Amino acid sequence: MSNLTQEQLAVLKKKLQHRYLELQEEIHSELGRSSDERHISLASNLKDVGDNSFVDMLMDLDVSIIERQVHEIQKVETSLKNLADLKFGDCIDCNEKIGFDRLMASPTAQRCLDCQNRHEKTYAHELNPTL
Image (cartoon, rainbow, N blue to C red):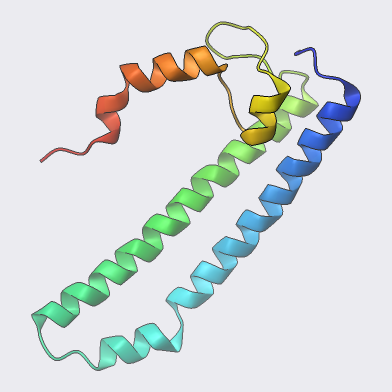
């Protein structure tokens, strides 16, 4: 396990738990909003194919937002499990310690800054969709 103090681990655990609750609220809110009367009203007032496309885009956007939130909640759960299993704070690539400042900025970080930069450069093409 990393060389984080018990106090630092407690701060990170609290931060992860807080983010988990925030994400749960965001997902519930987003799900409620997508079934909201605004969407129903908008869909019932469609006049042409362009309107249909707009409603489809809004629904796709809602799904994308929820998918992003679910993905983040999975990362938070993994970090909390690693914290409990004493596997938290070590880089998954080089096994070096991830600094406390980096973990405060991104508590779900699994790589040290050097390995994260290398990973992003290596896999940058995967973030750019192509036809």
